[in-house]
Amino acid sequence: MRLIYRFFLFFIILFATACSNEKPTITKPLDKRNHENTIITREFYTNDGKTKFIIDNKAQLNDHRLDQIDHEIQTFYYEITHHYKNPHYDWEKTIKIVLRSENDISFAKKNEMVLYNTLGDHYLLPHELTHTLLGFGDFKQNEFNAQYGYLTQEGLAVYLQEKFSPEKIVFPTNGLEIHSIMKYIIAEKQNIPLKELASNSTCYKYFNSPNQGNADQLLWKSYIHSGSFVKYLIERYGKNKFLQVYNTPDFISKVNQIYNKSLEELEKEWISYIRQNVKDLDIQQRGKLLFP
Ligand SMILES: [Zn+2]
Image 1 (cartoon, rainbow, N blue to C red):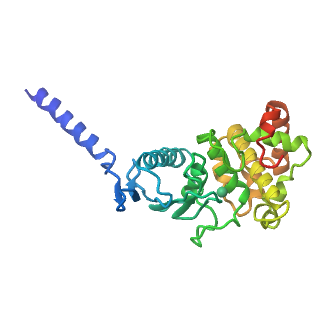
Image 2 (image 1 turned 135 degrees about the vertical axis):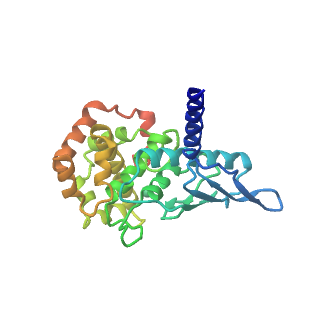
């Protein structure tokens, strides 16, 4: 009798423990509709219950498309926060996502992102989510800015966009494999020394160039270098090392400390890896380059 009592007690405790570890209850998305029954805003919590997203449906997408984007947000949120969490940054608990139909340059801030081109399938969701969830800039000042290294900020965003949504035709890869584009740039002898892109005094020239002449091409090349180099670092040395150099004010010396190699040595390794292991773009693929 006593043994049976213990047996039941064991299960009661087990059950109570299981309940206390349970994820928060998922509430249904809260939709607000206009008089034409189109959803104008949707609020929902992520499956871990930690973050609320508010979708502002300026693009007037129908319910099916909104469900699809809602599902993508949940999936990419999980991947980014579980596998690439920045140990130095806690993302905002309420994040607004504005969906726009027109074609323009999407952007992300601390608690808001604007996604263009959402009428079609080709919008930059993982890219912008990376910025918002992993943070960039001087966290102590509580602001987002680029002075802490465009190279790692944009590189990680480009890398995760390709990793999670390789089928999307988006900037800067246009659906092509990033390492293959880098191989093309190297073959054309158009590659930019990484220290130029990494240094706080010179990076603006490349990443923040005014929108004229060949400046767009420079911006495009900078994003390709960043994405390809970050992909190489993560796939060769692991994401934990990379996350220690992500968004650091003095990237070049931090690289020495974490990788035990200089940026120049890593750059040489990366270029020879690309030359030896990556497929060339074929003629058809070359036609898809944003700046051939
Ligand atoms: Zn970006």
